[in-house]
Every structure is written in structure tokens, then in C-alpha cells.
Length: 414
Image (tube, rainbow, N blue to C red):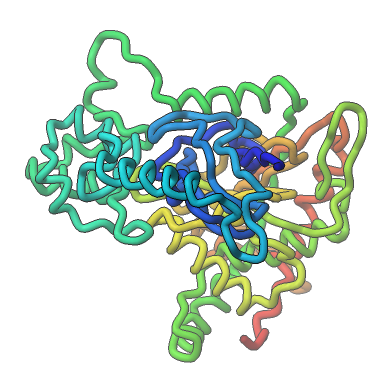
């Protein structure tokens, strides 16, 4: 007989642990390859762990609400119990197994007695805000299979209390409480973000470069085509997919920016997978990844960006959709931010922030002389790792993107 350990898989560069939400299989259940065994939650997405083998689940190594590390065993599967789809047990052992399963069903663990399953974060917020079990049961969930998400709970709290003072930040704490004098412990998500940011600052030699671009051609093109595009495709066209297309083109010309460092080795990436920093309604931040961005048309990028952003807001992204990024962009302009100094998303070598688009007076050069006119301008902020990317290359990279912005074909068809 052979025993197989089902491990918590790696779900992204910055994801090191997950919380057990729900067991989808019970001890004694037959399992085939790719059957979903256990449901987990990370600081980014909820997901299920599939089995890599066929067999019988003989032991659960973790309980609901346990926090487990990547690579840690979750369960034991006996792979030689299953032969020709029949359980190879003698009658006595089979009877004992049935009795054991009957007892398990008759006396379920305490955490399964409730009608719904809630994530640890939802439970913690509920406890802090005094939400009763019956109130939780009546909240309409927008998560997978109707699960109550953090956003659902926060919306309920805002309506129940009748004001915005109970709206919480991305870690689930009352913002008004943080303004009060005293000490509070960082949440698990705050700790993860803190560690990830410090790690990036410690590992990468951060350098910033800034450049201003005239984005008038793109602005006017979008104004001209956004209604046409919506009527035809049923999708809103924002600036983000346009930025993605131009960055993907520049990365093909500057492939060293599409690489990572491991020890003293530079790992060049064949695929251009651009992470798109996305702010969620509750203030949280997640980075969905557009795989092979350079191979998508503008229409394809628009649909992909809208789809990922929409599902990110309701916590429906898959683990594979938030990992594998080779470069990251952030559209900080949506918050009317002029520019920023973004921190590199490890193990990448660069990140580009697009500031707010402003209508400003500008000097316009012509063959008949200079004059002042109104133009739309944007500032690009490029953070890059000076261990590999020197100042000249970092500057040429954003200069190339500036040129692509300013030379946008205003008669481009969609």
C-alpha cells in the first residue's frame, strides 16, 4: 500500500500560507485525480486544492480555521485501496469503515453545525462588530456558491449602523479606531504586506525615474470611440488596457525589464505577463495578471481587464490569475494622484505607475513658431532594480513608452 501526502500548493510569489475553510471530502471517501479535496483562503483569493492521485482519503492533518504553510501536508490519501474502481476491503473492514463514516456524519465537528461556512476573516469582523449568527445567516453572499465575503459583511454593517464610521480598511479594522491614541496589533494581512514590502526594499536597489507625456491623442481617440466600442462589444474602454498594450510593446524592446533575479542569476522570461494593481471597494489591493499581454489585441485586453477587475471586486479570482507576473503597472491616476514611487513586486525588476491625466497649458512647437495651447498630460513613474537595470536603460524604457503614447494613431480603428 502506498500513502500520498496532499500538500498545500504554491499559489503565487507572495503567498506563503492559507487558512482551511472547509473539507470537501470526508475520511473514507473515494477520490479520483483532480477531485477537489479541501477549500482554502489566502489574503488574495479563495480556492480549492485538487488531488493529484486516485485513492481513499484516510487522514485529515488539518482542521477548519487552521493556518498552514505552503508545502505543508494537508491530508493522507491511500493510493492502493482503489483497483478497477472497486474498494479492496474485506467485509469486516468494510463494515467497520461504514460504521466509522456513519459516526462521523452523526456527530459532525462543531465548525460544521452552522448552516453556512464563513472564512476566519468574516468570523473575526463579525465578532468584533457584534454580528449575531442569525444576522450572518441572513446576509446574501456574493462569493463562490453564495459564500458571504468581507465586502458583503461590511456593506451589511454600513446599512445596519446607518453611517460610514463602521466602514473598515483592507485589514478589517475600523478606520476610526486607528486614529485613537493607543496600540493595536497588526492583522495577519497587514503583517504579510509589511513583510513583503520590507523584503522588496531590502532586496532590490530601488531607483525612480519620471517623465511627462502628452496623452492628448489617446484622450481624443478614446472620447471618439468609447460609445462605439460599448455599443458594439458591450464593454467600457478605459485607459488601463491601452497602457498595458504600450507597456507590453516596450517590454519586447527592453527584455531585461521582463526578467527576475535569483541569487546572482538573471532569469529572462519568454512570456510577457503584466500584473495590474487593482484597488478593491474596501481599500484592499490585488494584482491580477494578464498572461501573454503582448499577444492580445486591444479589444482582447479591454475584455480581459474588465473581466479580471470585475471578478476581483467579488473575490472570484483563481489562484493562477494572481501569479506568474513578470512586470507590474499601477494606474494611480484613478485617485487623482499626480505621480508616485511604487515598490517593486518581487521577484520582478520594475513597476510603472501612471498618474492622473491633467488638462494643462503647454508650449506647442510648429514650423511657424511656438504658441501656448491646452493639452492633456500624464506623468509616468518608473521604479526599477538598479542591480540589473541601470539609469540609462530605466530612462530609455519610459522614454519609449512616452513616444508610444504621443505617437498614438488617432485614426486607429477598433
